[in-house]
Image (cartoon, rainbow, N blue to C red; front, top):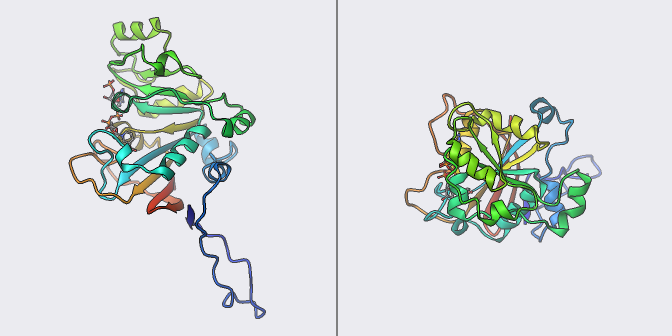
Length: 274
Ligand SMILES: NC(=O)c1ccc[n+]([C@@H]2O[C@H](COP(=O)([O-])OP(=O)(O)OC[C@H]3O[C@@H](n4cnc5c(N)ncnc54)[C@H](OP(=O)(O)O)[C@@H]3O)[C@@H](O)[C@H]2O)c1
């Protein structure tokens, strides 16, 4: 893994005060520790003006093929790689809650997030439980509440839906012990309300893992604070959507590049709302 951006400022200066004699520090390619990755991807501090203004932080983590596919035959794994999975795990380990669309849960067979010894002290110091909760966004609640995602989590799995969601399905979820939270007045969730509802549960470090339809709504609602995008050196072609899928925004929104890491041809980019 090496950092391509931002590079550290040159430290050596030549006697005449210029940097000419000192080569710019090149990026070193070596295995980063989990602690180094956790530092590189730390959430903004609560007193960060953007974090404080919004009362939390919604980060997304997605992988895309070179040609823009967000999955291959329904799965993101064929686009991913070792370093991508490592960063995926680190981002989960830093989050209070992972917000995910129901179709991703169904397609990818989501299981509860696990506790990892390597992050135990960091999470405890941040006032977090041993593993992030998973919050599934759904309108129809067409989910199997007997799955381990709902029956065996370390932190109770949440269901986020709208007040108009089918009452029988809401009742079914609650019978199974699942906590259902409403974040919208209609059938579905209002993406702009998700952060506030989760903050009410003490979750302010939010991570969304998509999928593209959910992420498109977060972005269009102006609710996305940070985008962690892995560009995989693979070509998928096909009809898979891009990492955001939905109606166009009236004006494309600009984000600021925060960092770029590289390993094995994968680019790990991070953009912040500017
Ligand atoms: N490349 C990546 O990093 C990445 C990441 C994640 C997923 N994926 C891939 O993306 C595919 C799935 O993505 P997707 O875009 O089709 O689906 P998705 O965004 O994961 O989920 C869509 C579902 O979420 C629920 N939903 C979305 N917006 C909602 C709202 N406003 N209110 C209530 N419910 C809402 C609905 O669930 P109900 O139908 O239950 O009502 C909807 O059918 C999978 O193939 C997966 O492998 C790729």
